[in-house]
Length: 193
Image (cartoon, rainbow, N blue to C red; front, top):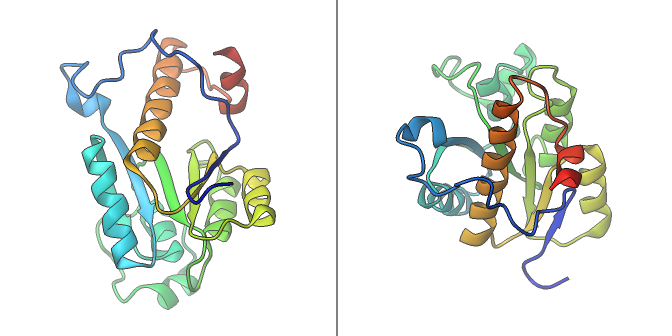
């Protein structure tokens, strides 16, 4: 693979003209906004991904650890909470997010461990999780995809990567809405395009 590779568990459709995915396609911009939880221990990488997501018209909540992400989602254990955060209450517990993008290699809890905890949760298992890493290690990539990661992106993350993720999410959300609340399996959905 090249220096910036993407490995995906899904197949993108050649055309997606059945959906208008432009940021101004709906008069209610809140309905179009994708809320992304970005998790990275590196301040520089976190700011870069946050900026790219905001340019792509996404609402972003950025945190510096897997434990902090679990706390924001309302999934943390009390004993682990004390290890990861000096603040016991930040007002975000039970946060609703549409997509989670996380670094793989972080101290305390890896992105892989975060992925497993999210996929074990009945409340969050359907939320797409994207793993990113500066290391292109095939066994690591395969393990993440097998555990349920939507994609694995090799850093540096580019605007085109973020825009594609947003567009795919918007397409799956549109199909879910059209199905009157029917739960759509993302991996089966990709075959229907």
